[in-house]
Length: 198
Image 1 (cartoon, one colour):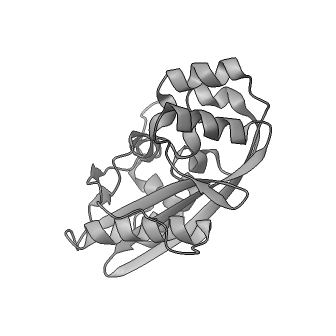
Image 2 (cartoon, rainbow, N blue to C red):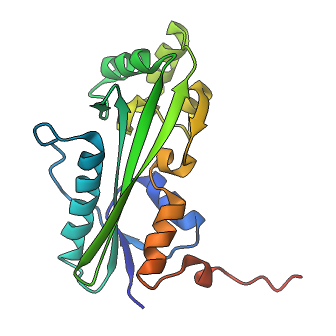
């Protein structure tokens, strides 16, 4: 059985993979995340997920390597990670009271093949007050997250409605990731522990 490597330093992606019982090691990939000219957001996240997986697979050709990337998209424009607290505050103000898309791509490189897909989830924010935006940015939670918020943290109180995959918004679409692993010969459910209790 091939080993599984997560080509990401994201603790949230590690937690999600652990949640579904996958045994893996972490080796972050170093890739240039600059968007290409006129690159559509869905193509951008899929390209980065594939580049991350392939970069690590080049070093570990016998492993199954998972790469992933997440972008928050508002009016067709990608909101990256905030540069500073003021930038995070600006993003929250733009998202306030509006719907946006969270696009997460996952790629699996294995045996000179790389399969990938993009999951798009619609997220609607309620109207945010100045006080709560200031309080949220003061926590530093937004600083390492696309779009300046984390749905699994304090930022979860901003979400009025979600249509799609919650785990994809956190950083890794679990159903699709499990499907890619199964196609590569690793059905995650066959590795779940057996309880002796009935």
